[in-house]
Length: 144
Image 1 (cartoon, rainbow, N blue to C red):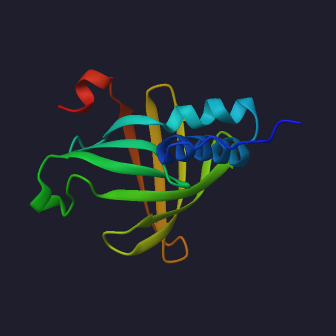
Image 2 (cartoon, helix red, strand yellow):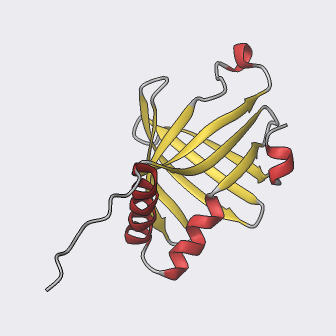
C-alpha cells in the first residue's frame, strides 16, 4: 500500500482556491457565480472622481481605489478600500461594508447588470443613505 504524501502548495494558490470555494459556498451554484462576476471589475463613480476595482480579498470582497481626481478635496486616496461582507439577495448583493480608513461599518446593497452597477450604503439605522451608480471600465482605461 502506497503512503499518502501531501504536496505543498504555495500560499497564493491555496488562498485563491479558498476564495473561489468561499464565493461558491456563499453564492450557491452556477447562477450565483455569474452574479459574482457581474460586480467584479473596474468601475468609474458617477461623479467621475474615482475609479475602483471590485475583487475578492481574503474572505471578503473589496472595492479598492485605483485613481482619485483630487485626493485632498475628496478625503480619499489611492489604495483606500471598502471591505464587503455581502451575500447574494435576489438580483443583487446585501450585507455590510467596513471602511478601515475611517473605522465605519454600514449596511450596503450592490446590484450590477452589464456595464452598470448601483451601490447603496446606509448608516444610523438606515436613516442616512447614499446611492452611487458606477460605469464599468474597459481594462485599457481602468488604469488611466
